[in-house]
Image (tube, each protein chain N blue to C red):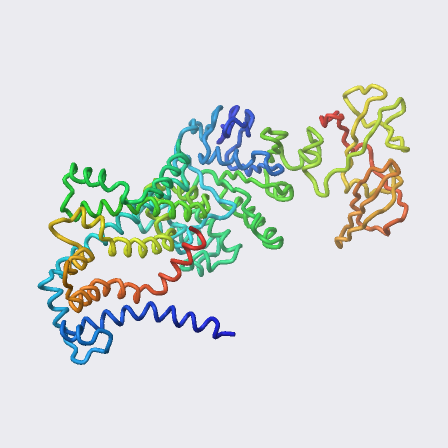
Length: 267
Length: 351
């Protein structure tokens, strides 16, 4: 009976692992080696493609941009969504429900629909070609979902905890920092991981905001030529771009699995 | 001067009035218990005093100062919540010191106060544990400890024992009573359990549907209830109520005629009344005789609750020290009419 499960699962795992193998394998070939033998295992491995990608194709700089922007956006997202979730779940103020519904509704607007007004706004604010502008853009686009998740998560915590802190003399900000932020850890972890992936992998928004400089995903996209593509170089770029995310996954594997479970139950 | 004075305090939630012009004064050092069935507004009243609910109308004075709009933390109160509301990510010591840390007290003072509270509540070995690693009774003590370190003028307890098992509840109840004797602070305590109210209170406030029914010492409420609700609520098992008809010779209780108790009010012949008899007063050998059929006997060891049915179909419970009653058997119960209480059909006491 276990074959029924094992075989499809093995195929599924293979379908995930093979592209990684293909990328790394070809990144180690030169262009000629690739053309002569696309699918075979590399004969004469060389790191020249990585050196070229890092230097000549500027992926080193782009990686730095990506790290800054992703880190900035994720930190900003977690702080603001936790604050908003705290307010929406625990505090009573006029139009709370309406506000929450508006935030929920904004979840349904695809990014593409607002690209033009978004671009004009960024222009007007002088945020085009700044990393800060991209951080703000990511925060704006991904915030509704984060607020929704944090509100749902905090709604399940006992309100008495907040009341106890009020009796203890804590201000709202102190309650948020000392109680809600640490209590929100499982949900914040989930959001941290999800948003890191979104920001890191984004091409569209990044392409619009950062036009002179680039993030790594845009840089990789630019490695594809109109007529010819240096596939081993592209593979090396992809491997470089994927490396931080894979490292992140290896470090936080347990928390990622826990975090997804939290999202599944509480989302 | 009274420490806490409520004057015509009302509370409305979205148009529904849950507290109706409650007026009450609580003396310094007094242990006051708000008691009543669920939904009677006792917790809401406590939360209004705590500042967790806004007062719709009326005034709240604490220590002679109007406190209606004062921040909860500035009212000189500490509260123990039903769920304890401990901060799960902090250790016991951090939980207890949270309020003092928020007030930016010096570290030495914080440590001394936490150590003192831990000593009083025997929490020293648990100071470095997280709440998840504590038993229910221990969490309860931490919640009390968190209130003690703030040195409040008034402690507020919101059904603090309802999450504990029966044995621990009795034990913690005694601890709270001792704590009150040691610290001498004013305590306001909310419960739906009349036993807790009777055993702990200096003063009981009985609430029903957002109104105060009666205020008094436990024995005053037990002996001299203002109405059938208070009479029924205070005392366990609850008071028996029998339909009574005033006749020229006395009170007609089914086939039995009882003499009229001494009253200041003159009753009209034919008037319908309710006669309240406490189960523990049905353990006599003389007085008014009530022939009954025994239905169930609950033996508690020292006493037994004998559930009976009168020939009129009314049921009553007698508490007897020594009983040979068996289910199905006929039994004669006796009571002293002077210990029975008379109520009108509207529930108001007739004295």
